Structure formats: structure tokens, C-alpha cells
Length: 488
Image (tube, rainbow, N blue to C red; front, side, top):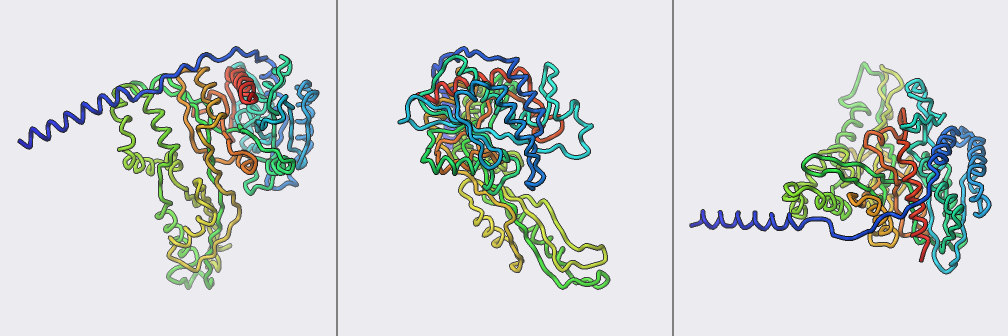
């Protein structure tokens, strides 16, 4: 009898799952078609090449920065975009950061802002010859535009400028004020004392509060997993970003000659510290954005795959366990711990009196810099360690996914491609956007450029480049976004 009961229960569960999977599909909604937008693709490509050719490289040491290159970049923008410089006000703050303001017709509405940064990372010394095309020439070979900043993020900055210039050419006037805010040192500032913060404080002092902000972040990633997730585009919209903290942890000892070593030298004791940190990772948690990401992807899978993905709530413990074992996935569910540098004795035959290690933590939203220090002291057996913050930036807050701005981004992406999967996600690196939290709650990180995962790996690396055919669609997105987001 029990055999029949169990068999019946299994069959019933299978039937329920089959029905559930059949209904586990994206919400049917007619987003319409994307509006036709005039884009001067040739001009956009040429201006991106020119922008790349100006090496606006930032360094942590301000004395190493060649500010004449930023002046040259500003002059280039003036020449390339005359209508912007005729119709928008322009200010330079913090030596080289830019504030453009496009006045709207409705002063009673909160303004919107589009962010970018002018600076790029340097090319590693000795790797120049590894580039297929020189990193600061902006070569356009018909397939790609090559050079430092092609992906991070002069493409974004030029896309915004092209969109505004073209809208001005067409006689468009926004209802809300539109701000273009371009920092100078995003690549090197992790403590909040750079151009973006200076811009924010300038605007805050004037009583300005933004309706929404869009900055760099997610991109459009083609997805084609045969039999599971076919011919889709994953549109990642960053709704928050991780924090950044470098801690120096030091152990002291007597030192002396290496011919008479103790049981553990300072380095030996430090090894235990490293072991404790790596063996006691932060607790993993599936936050709502992760569940939304899996649900969005799952609903777009083929029917057989949906038999599994429709049960994501029940599978959360398994999903979390698997993600913890995969570094690119683990960083989405917990604060990460990375031991990156170590220092001990200056000579091979000398016992170190002091040994130190630098550990980089990327905090999840909700985990503070102080929480990280408490974690270090809790998990390390050696309680005599010295813990010192070298550089720190708190994680951002989460922006809502039901805001007007997020819905506009989602709608524009779906109009452009009905096979898009628009999903909120957590940005692993840092952006200038986080510094604007005092004057905006709706901050989104999205760059409307279609690139492969392989190309994304070129960011900050050798042979950074962007597909030529993604430039014009990026400009068109910014035009549509400004039209929609600047309206009431």
C-alpha cells in the first residue's frame, strides 16, 4: 500500500512541477518598438578614436598626473561638441572634473544626471609591444576601435556627448534639468576624496537633489546555451556596488639570526593568520537581486530547463552552496577575502621582527569597514595582531528596481530587443556613482554596449577594444533615455 502512496505522491509532484514549469515564463507585456533615432555613427566613431588618443591617465600620486592632457581633452570636447558648449553651462571643479548643466523647462522637477569619468588606467610598462594597435592611437580597423578607454569608459562618455549634441541639433528641450558629470580620477580614488565627491559636494551645497543617475556598470551580454537559454541578451543593470578595504595585518617577534630560529618566526605566525582568514570566509547570503537574476534567466530558459528553474526558491540552499565554490559566483553572495601582499625580513638570514600581510576585502552592501575589522579579530587565533586600515570605501546602498528610472531602462532595452533579459545585479568594482548617494536614491550602473565576456576581460588589459557596430546603438540608447527620463 505504501508503495502506491509514495508512487502517487511522486507522480503528483512531477505533474505539479510540469504545470508550474509551463507557467514559469516571462510576463507578457507589449513594450512596443524602439523609437527611430538619428545617430551620426561616423562622427561618434571618429570622436571616440580622438578621445582615446588623448592619454588622460590617472595615478594615485597626483604629482604624476599630466593635467595638460586633461586640458587637451576638455579642448577636444569643446571643438567636437559646439552646441553643448553653446547651450549648456560648464564648470571645472577639483582641477579637471566637469559639470555640464542643460536647463529644462520645469524647475519644479528634480533633474537627472548621466555620469562618466575622463581618466583611464596606465598601460603596464613593458607590455606596449603586446598591443595589436598602439594603446593611445584609437585605431579603427573597421571591426574594432582599439585603445585604452575604449571600454572603460570613453565609449560611455562619448556616447552621452553624442546623444546630447544630436538632441540639440534636433531642437529637443528637456523638461527636467539634465546634468553631465565627468570625474577625473575614478580609476584611482577609493577613499572618496576625488573629483566625483567634489562634484557631489558642489551640487549638494546648491540644494540639488537628483531624480535619478545613470553611470557605467552592466553591459549587454549575448547568451546562447543550446537547449537551455538560446539567443538571449542579458542586460545587467547595477543597483549597488561592493565596498573596498585594504587592511594591513602585522605580527611582531624578537627577530634575530636565522641560525637559531624559534618554533615560529613572525612569518610563521603570520601564516596562521592567513590560514585563519582564508578558512573562515564571510557568511554567504542570497540577496533579493540574486534571486531576481536567477528567476529572470530561469523564466527565459527552454521548457526542459524550466523544470528545474521554476523551483529556485526550494533550491536556494543548493544554489548558494554551489556559488560559494565558484569564485566569479561567490563574490555575488558574500564579502570576499583576498590576501594579496606580504612582507617580512629584508634578508634571507635574518628573522623578521615584524611581518605583515595586506588583505583586500570587497564588502557586500550592509557590511561595513568596521564589520570587516571585527571579523578579522574574531577569526584569527593570534589576538596580538595589529590591524590597520590602508584604504577604505564603504559599500553602496541598493537602489530600488521599481523606480521610474529603472523601469525606463528596462522598457528601452526590451523595446530594442524583445529577447532581452533585464536583471539587477551587484557591481564588483567601484564607480563614481556611489559618491552621489547623499543627493540621489535612484542610482543605476549600465553601459548600453553589446560585448562578449571575452571582450570585457580586455578592460584594463592589453588590446582593450570595442566593436565598431555597438557605438551607434549606444548613442541611440542615451538619446532615448534622455528623452524619457527628462520628462515628467
